[in-house]
Image 1 (cartoon, rainbow, N blue to C red):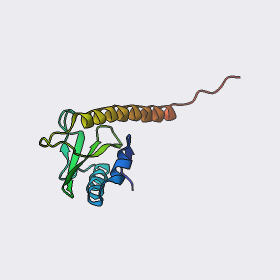
Image 2: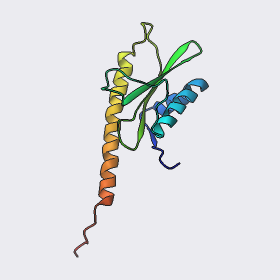
Image 3: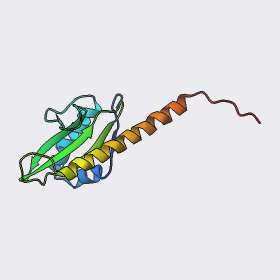
Image 4: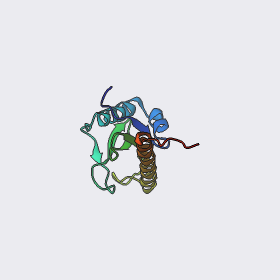
Length: 133
């Protein structure tokens, strides 16, 4: 277990993954496992509009439906699972604007969580001043 980054689930992403078909859970779970180890799933691709390869998506076709799992490796020491959803658009491969907004909001929440984690670690490492009574 050494060297594994924890996965933190933002919003309803864990609940949504659990509600997905078994094959979707398997592929997205494997992608997250690889991300925890510092690797990348062969089907993981950068999500367009999020500035590079630090927000990734895995697309899974299951029972004539398409599902996507979105996560970020942007923050040191942790993987944030941002969104798991069934693609509803009938117009090509484009992700719906409502799903993009969910991802943006959850990415902001991941930044806040990571900032609090860093602050807590910093405070824990600072030497304590003795109390003067």
